[in-house]
Amino acid sequence: MQEKESQGKKRLNYTVAALAAALAIAMLLPQGQIAPSMAARAESAWAQPCVAESDYEYVDETHSIHIDRVEENGIVYFVADVQLASASQFQTAFGGGEYGGGNEHISSMATKLGAVFAVNADNYGAHEYGVILRNGALYRTATTARHLLIVDANGDLRVRSEREGENPQELGAQLVEEGALQTFEFGPELVRDGALVEFPADFTVISTRDTRREPRTAIGQLGPLHYIIVVADGRQDGYSKGMTLQELQQVFMFYGAQTAFNLDGGGSTEMWLCGEIINQPSGGDERSVSDMIWF
Image (cartoon, rainbow, N blue to C red; front, top):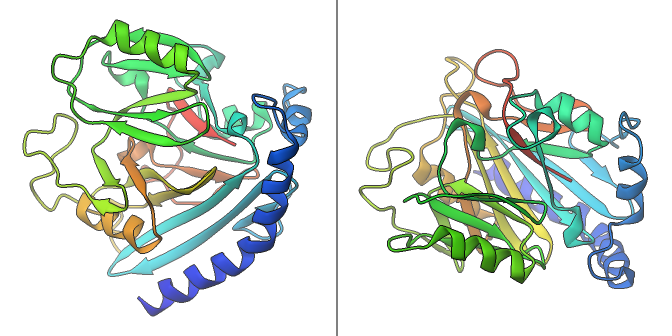
């Protein structure tokens, strides 16, 4: 715990100056405009990879990304503190470059797009459920009991956990009208309004009633355009045994998340920064996935 506390303090100290600069840039950007450095990288299909100041840090005019590596109680996990300058920087990508385009390595997608940072999303291609909206475009409207993470027009995270009686077509149209940026169908919701969420006993995505340990990927929000992303390695004896959902909740509480949501995990769990896979995927190599989150 002491190691984690010192890393958290170090992360916060690193971030203060960079956040001020990033927020200043954000105030100068018209709403909906992509930050200049991001637009420049996206102009080339094979943009030059970014150069990080260290293995776990990247800062420029519109990004501040610091990653803590934490090892405790037989678990190795990574906590990315991400501050953006504009909501338009919160991007997603499909494997194969289009909806229904199949699976692709995160490293391949991220390099093509000139990303700084990327992480696996909800693996929409492995199921046919829910409301799938990506980069402002609506692709799917189907019923589900899963929890839905919404990234709104301001880049804020909110979760719909009560889905009974929901009309997915109406919800999809409403989200488009509101200017929502992204949705992710997975869960469960981990933290709401800074407090732990009690897991439903009959949640349909993954068992929440036992102490099941798995590789995990989850995302939370600390403040405006300020996110925390956790990737926990697992299924690797002698290295990392994986994390329970309850332990995952506690990590987000420690870092002060106001909202947090569990994404796809297992062999899909991957964190990528500036051309390098930061974590150690459970399959020994990165898995091809149907989608990713990137900045």
